[in-house]
Image (tube, rainbow, N blue to C red):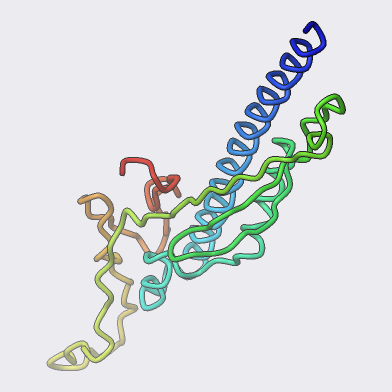
Length: 196
C-alpha cells in the first residue's frame, strides 16, 4: 500500500513537472514569435529611413511587406534559447510569424516510465499591424509648367512629404531633414488571440 502511494506521488510529481514544462514552452513560443515580429518591425523602419525621400517606395513599407524573414527568425531563435527552448519551425505568415518551439529540458523522472525524455512543444503567432496609411503620389500627374521661364533658374526647394497618416494624425516629413515616427508608432505588434 505504501509502495502504491509512493508511486502515485511520483506520478503526480511527474504530471506537475510536465505542466511546468508546457507552461515554460508556451512562454518561450510567445517570446520567440514576438521577437521575430519585433525584428521585422525594426527592419521595416530602417528600410523606410533608407528611402524616406522617395515617397514612391513608401507603400511597400507602410503595408509591412519589406523585411528579411530569415533575420527575423534568427531573432526568434535567440529568444527561444533564453527561455530554455529551441525553435522547431519559424514560418512567415501574412503580416507576422508562426513559431513552434520545443523545450530543451525534460520531465526527467526516471521513476515514472516514459517521462525521462519527455519534452514540451508549443506554438505561438505574432502579427505586425500597420498603424499608418499613405496616399502615394500619382506618377502620371505632371507639375504645371511655369507661365514664363525666369531669366535665371531658381533652385527649387523640395516641399514637405505629405500623405502619411498614423492613427488618424497626419505626419509631415521634411525631405531636407527626414525623421520618421518611432517603430512603435508605425506598427503595432501583438500575439494573435490578444483582443480577440
